[in-house]
Image (tube, rainbow, N blue to C red; front, side):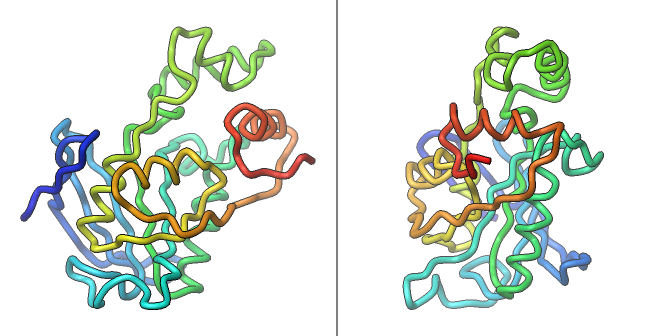
Length: 217
């Protein structure tokens, strides 16, 4: 197996692959491991370039491959937490890629709580209950507002042969991170899911302080 290098993030290596039947249809699951020992996952649907999936390159019309970079969120993705929109966004992305019959979800481990870790995220939640927003809660703990890095994602897409993407995201920082890693972002397609009373303030903060593409109401 060939290790892939990117300027900011060291090495990522493909270490496993298998078919993964899901409620959204069958995907090919690829396991990647970084030099730091972090395991990431890529779920591939249909014909994308490279690897063990058939295909001759990015879309010839220049549209790019549909891609979701999903930051690990145990509370939202697995436990159904209403504090965030992570779980609904992941499910919506899988459904959209299944409908398109082609695309990639890169599931990024080590991104819990925008990179501060699970325990620190829970501590930040407690501060939010006391009136801090999601940014100030992190800062009050002496932690970055957002510590995520997307160079591993760029390396994974490079390994899969995906050079141009239509990014399923509300977050312009993800597009910038992929561009810095040599991946062309030809479009940003927002994943907007309904707010609820528990996460309305959180979503407003992401819009107002991080520049996420979200409605004003």
